[in-house]
Amino acid sequence: MSKIILEKSKNAFDKAQSFIPGGVNSPVRAFGAVGGTPIFIKSGAGCRLTDVDGNTYVDYVGSWGPLILGHAEPRIVKKIHDAVANGTSYGAPTETEIQLAQLIQEAMPSIERVRMVNSGTEATMSAIRLARGFTRRDAVIKFEGCYHGHVDSLLIQAGSGATTLGTPTSPGIPQDFVKHTISLPYNDIDAVNEVCARRGKEIACIIVEAVAGNMGVVLPKKGYLEGLREITKKHGIVLIFDEVMTGFRVAHGGVQSIYNITPDLTTLGKIIGGGLPVGAYGGKKEIMDSISPVGPVYQAGTLSGNPVAMTAGIATLEILRDSAIYKTLEEKSKRLAAGMEQACRDARVPAYHTRIGSMLCTFFTDRPVTDYATAMKSDTKRYAKFFHGMLERGFYFAPSQFEAVFVSTVHGEKEIDATVDAFRDVIKDF
Ligand SMILES: *Cc1c(COP(=O)(O)O)cnc(C)c1O
Image 1 (cartoon, rainbow, N blue to C red):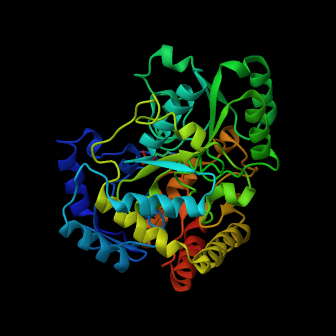
Image 2: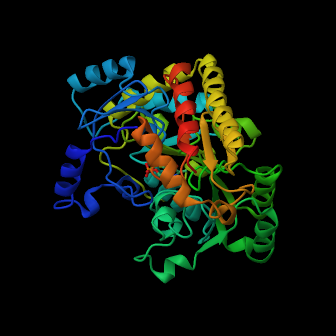
C-alpha cells in the first residue's frame, strides 16, 4: 500500500493557518480527532472527491449530509447556472420561496408554515426563540450528544465537533444562559418525565435529534419519541424535531414520517439547500404565526430565501419526490453496512453498527450504543487507524468516530464493494 502524497494539501494547510484560526472554517475539518493533514479539495463529481494533489476518493461525508444526490449533480448544476444569470439576490420575495416551501410541506405535513434561513444553526436558534416567545417560558430541554448547531443555549453537552474537540460545552456562553438549558441523557424517557413533573411549567420546548446523527448514529428506543410527544402535550411544551440532518435523508418525510409522530416544530437544513446554504424551521400555523411580521417574535435575514439557494433546493427536492430513490438508497446502504459488519465479525474486531436509511455508523466498541455515554466508550484510536487506512486506499470517511457515514444515490455497487474490500484490508491489522 503506497502512502498517498498530500504535499499540496500540507502547504495549503500551513498557509491557511496564517489567515484562518486553525486553518479551517469549521473545526471538525482540521482532522483534530484523527491526526494528520486535512485534505484540501479541488473538485467533486458524483460520489468522488479530488484533492489538490490529484488524489481521488470515494466520498462518504457528502458535505456532512447535504449531497444525497452526489457532487455536481448535472440537473442541479444547470438550474443553479440559470438562476445566477438572473441575478443572485434581490432582498425581495420570489416565487422560488413558495416552491421550496411547498415541496417541504408536501413531504412533511406537520409543517403548515415554514420560514427559510441560511443554516441549520439559524433554524434551531430561531425555533427556540419562537418556542420561548410562544409559550412565554425560558427553559429548554436538550439531550446529551445531540448537536443543534452552535446556538448558545444548545451548545451544552453538544455532539459533533464539540464532542470531538473535547469541549461539549463551550466557554463564552454565560451562566445566565446555561441555567435555562436542561441537558438530559438521550433515550431516557424517565429522566424527561421526572424533570417535567417538577418543572413542566417553566419549559418552553424540548429539542431533539429524533434520530441522533452527531454522536455517531444513535437510534431512538422503542416508545421514546412517542413518550416525548406525550409528555410535551401534557405540559404545553413545544416539541421540536431537529431534522437538519435526517430531513429528506432517512426518508422523504424524515424521521417523523417513519415513526409517525407530529412534532410542533421541525428544523431543516443540509439536503434542502441542495449544496447551498439553506436552513428552515416550520410547523404548526398557530405557533409559526408568532413570528414577525404576523406576530411579535423577531427573526429576519438579508439573504434568507436567496433565489439561487432556493433553486438548488427545489431542484434537489423535485428529484427526491421519486420514492424509487429511497428504495435504491436503502439497498446500497444496507449493502455497505452489512459488508462492514461481516468484515468486523470475520476479523473479530468488536464493533456496534447502526443504520437508518442512508445514514450509518460503525462504533468501535463491544457494547450497544444507545446514548452519549455508551457512544463515548468507542475506541477513538482505532477509529483514527480506520480513517487513515481508508483514506490511503481512496475512501473518504468523516474524520471523527462521532459522525455519520452518508451514502448517496450515485455510490455504485462497485464502489461499495470496493469500500468493503478496503475495510477488510484495513481492519486486518487491528
Ligand atoms: C448540521 C446540523 C445542525 C447545524 O447546521 P449548520 O448548517 O451546520 O449550522 C443542526 N442540527 C443538526 C441535527 C445537524 O446535523
